[in-house]
Image (tube, rainbow, N blue to C red; front, side, top):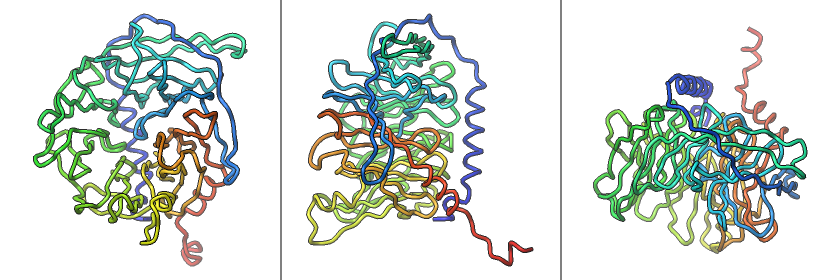
Length: 421
């Protein structure tokens, strides 16, 4: 895997350049401030008894909460708020205020709940859908000195970019901040499904492409490369992974799986790599490795090993195989979950596995963890069933000793002769 990641720092430089470019455009102003509802802290802290990982449950009780989809940004740019969703009487975007532990119920200026959200790359704002409107939300937080007694005052300001009919999925931002992408499904067939781009500068809406010939589903999982501002990917079938360059607008399939082969839950990582889960044994007794895909060459490598043996049961295989992968933005880690709610880390350079935390889902039912990353490669967020008979967004922190070991053992080792020259 060393060849895949020798250019990591070049990718980081590209990402920084993209961020700088994103902040240069003149954008329309935001509206007047309006108050958001603030709830008392509910968070609970725990330590995984097997691994020692520190766990923070953002909410507690018997209600249903879940994290943003794993390829969206859950942390605001200044790390002040962590985003997640409520899926009960209030069905919409919420936030955990890191300084006070309080919870925010987000809404548009007219009170509509927010969906399809992602945090903006280069400033502490949120992109989301308020009904048919694509909006950007900025926050003004006056933190309480005693949040258990008195709530903080939190105001929002809204900028409307455009209106979109039949939007599906989440908004996703290009690494240079110029565009948001969104799937649009006007019906249930491929010929009624398209990808649209939204200019973050002026809200201009333009159709990028429709679904390729031979596909049999509508567009899903639309997402930008995190290092290349011209590439985005989307999912369809019978070929799962498609990539399109916004300059020529022609989709291509970088990996054409065989009939019955599992290819699922792709996500962009460093060096223009896509990470996905897959294997050659079909459901219901599938194997699923965590793999990297170079969309320019079609080259695939295993970074997180799964398993298969003929006598295994489905429940046994589900403990040894993976379903949702995601790579840290610094290139040091790939994380993946399984159907038992185990969260496994794989070192980005060496592919060594490290179990971070486990048993956050009961096999056979409930939300999948769908693990996403913070902005620094230090924490992951996922949905957990372990607390209070509810479903809660949980943040796990990677132990600092693991981070130090990755930095140490991920170095190139020079020979004695070389070091003495």
